[in-house]
Length: 279
Image 1 (cartoon, rainbow, N blue to C red):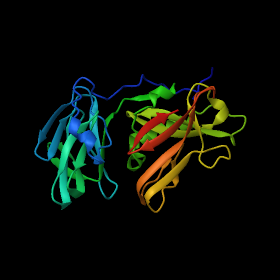
Image 2: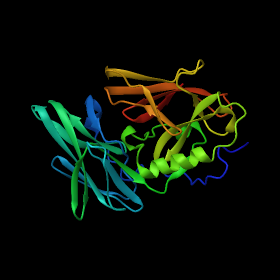
Image 3: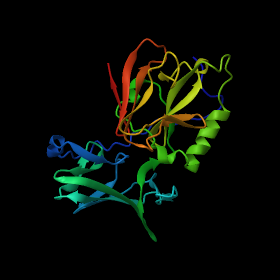
Image 4: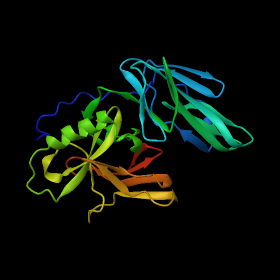
């Protein structure tokens, strides 16, 4: 076996799903509409629900990172506090927070427009944000099996310009091993900050990772499908590629994921930012 990169260090993958304090609300499974949060709850986090607001006090080394409508990033302290507020903008109410699995959502009942407001609370900061993630800033690892992908969140598109993300992508790009045929390519998943990122690499420089065929390849069924809206084409930043949902309210990435030796194939779909595998 040979390595994908010449001199990049990786650390073991850290699960940020709090399975010990996971408190599912059984009635939520009967409801059809959720406004999902794009993060999982770290083990050791302290959560409080007060009316329509969920407050999450993060353990070290986790922090919240948000992006506002202008594309500016806002950071909590390590071990800081973030919150979500659910607000019904149209309808008869019924827009309330609930924990589903390892994450939170604003759950719609009678409400027709259930808004999720993200904020990061610090000593002198309480900013309403377009989107928010919770990250372990030290986490980076290579994905070795398809099983590691199931249920994982992909990095939301608004965060590919984060300095910590672009720095790691530049490092990966500069340390790619030489290829004998750069025109044959594949998408390989890595875990960065606790989120999955798909990177576009020459097909012959890695034989240890699961992979997808790249967008547009003649052998590829990897696609971005817009179910509600205009379109969601694939987009790239350095070696990273993703489906751009700027003009799409419901954008789904799908395709076939192969084991490193191509002997096992499963169908992959990304719905609400989370990876699902099936035979």
